[in-house]
Image 1 (cartoon, rainbow, N blue to C red):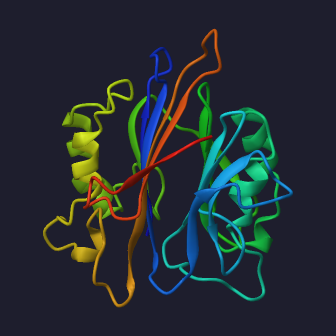
Image 2 (image 1 turned 90 degrees about the vertical axis):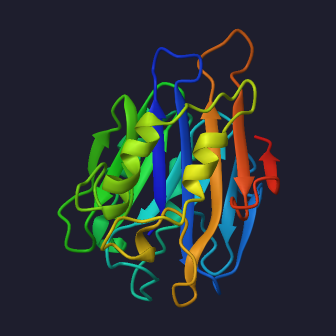
Length: 251
């Protein structure tokens, strides 16, 4: 179960800041974010080498998109298309509004269930499909403030991880992209703590769960409209528990 934490502040210099942990089988091959697709030269994303898609990416226009499995839908289905295609399709668009609208009209019968988020420095959405039996893909705006998305709905009380960690993010010092201070969020994204009775699989950073765990962390900030091109900051960690071992991704 992956996790995304959003901080939306539409009137702030940095209107969107978010952090994402990718949880996956350790044996599934992947490569860090880069320009992996010759037919999409404007896209920077991590690549899943098994299916060829991505879990998280960004394009040169400043659109970001990522995919999460919903509850009990880990792994591929040979009869269905890979969910990793969906962020790439979103990144074919120049703004979040157009991307979210286009992806809300896909046929949900073609994919296992998913949560998809799409955002830029003006708008942010999450899209929900409950799988091949869905009548349609539903689209929702991500609200201002702190929100969390896991294998459940946005800010769902059914998610033990969300109910345990969201108050901590609410109380934590906000990241400061200008100074590079992400320390409080780094600590929270690397936390192995979990709610009483929930089990280690509900920690923010999952380890030692039968070959399944947290493989990488991304910390991303999008600057608001500016006279020059708005900046994007992407700090990528193969292991956020080793805080010095991060890569600054250039988009």
